[in-house]
Amino acid sequence: MVPYRSIEDPAKLRRLLESVLLLERAMELPDLLRHIIEESMSMTGARYGALGVLDEGGTALSQFVTVGLDPEEEARIGPRPTGKGVLGVLIRDPHPIRVADIGTHPDSYGFPPNHPPMTSFLGVPIKVRGEIFGNLYLTDKIGWSEFTGDDEVLAEALALTAGIAIENARLHARVAEIAVYGDRDRMARDLHDTVIQRLFAVGLSLQSIVGTIEMPGIADRIMAAIAELDETIREVRSTIYELGSSRVESGVRNSILKVARELTPVLGFAPRVTFAGPIDTAVSDVIAEHLLITAREGLSNVGRHARATETLMTVTVSDGWCRLELVDNGQGFHEGQTDTRGGGLGLLNLQRRAEKLHGTFDVGPGESGGTHLRWEVPI
Image (cartoon, rainbow, N blue to C red; front, top):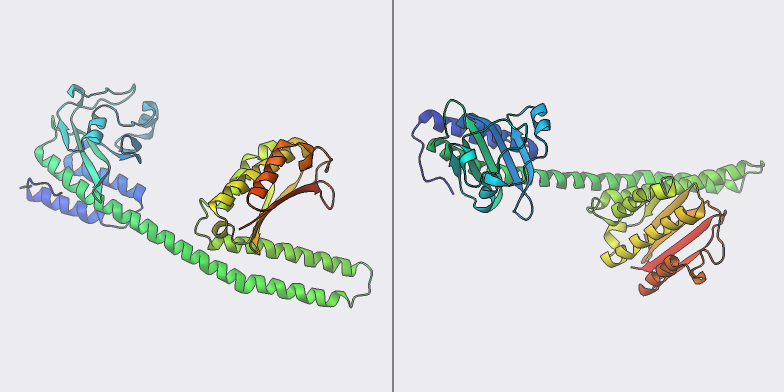
């Protein structure tokens, strides 16, 4: 709502217009918040300014951006305010507050140690699309004992414009994010249409000449190269699906990788993790929950029992199945220790989870030693 009081001073009106035009520039949100404070301080003659952003519940401050204090002063003051005292009044009752001495306000909470003295105070709420985004705080009007009515009107007008600018900044961020995902999709298509097809062609060419080679060892070396190409193709495919997914930050892949990072200290080394197929788009939330538990339990078992130095976890979605395989180079499979029938409650739990989802679970010796765990369920 536009303040009902008018500003008679032409210089102040011109200054307000200039500030409004400056706020209409495309800025990232952190820069915009600081700019709002600086403009408000300049317009009202405040020595210090701050902008507090409310948390999701709207009951406390989650961010507190300040202008006027140098870094050493901020460090000496300590933790940022969360919304107590007079700042809390503005949160509970979002209407302008103007007082000559903040210390005399009945809700004054006082200042922490090493905080510079502040007297006059002006606070106004900032709304974005009708909801309170945060509050603008101005203190210590230079050369005056208190902020004036004109200052309050100017701060309200700027807060109104700031709300629109903040919404614009959010929209710009969303548009940029959409553009990034569009570019990711383009890169994914390029990888699929060029890199993968070329790798396939090279692999097929090598396979076609293996049978014609009679020199000892050469055929084995070519087969090893073909195997490397196959592994590269799998990794590129995993990258393609990751690029094409719009759930990178909160998807199943990210959660699996987070589990791997969390259990690295238990293992004593970082596990290798590979993906194949549309992990983030095809795996339901129900399956994802069981999949993450299986990954955590499997890696934990390697860390506790296997005495391994390497482990590879592969998560695949193909042919209507979600599959997790875990292979290590540890001391190997021992009947009764890792067999699901041998009473291991953790592994037995994983088997039950697979069966609950109409899938299968198996653990046994790996082809080259160590242990091979396989958990798969239909999607």
